[in-house]
Amino acid sequence: MIKDDVIAGEFTEEIDASDADIRRLALSFIQEAWEDGLSHGIDSTALAHAALFSAMMDLVSLYGEEAVSKFAEEIPQRVERGDYSLERRLH
Image (cartoon, rainbow, N blue to C red; front, top):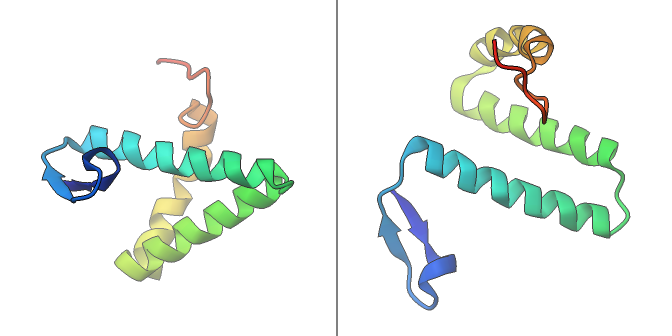
């Protein structure tokens, strides 16, 4: 469930959404904030560092250092596989 006060207007409505829908919505919020930062003159490298720091800090608070360290070990392979590329290669 997500609370949809953006669409609902004055009241907050809970709607059913798939995990993929929630992730797409979350990404749209991040992209909007990213564009806002760029429009205020913050360079994309600084935004990327801040976003990564914020994400890792949140994951550590939820899952702990050990679990996040194991997750982070897989990042180089995912980058090489194209998981984070705009024009993602399908294997």
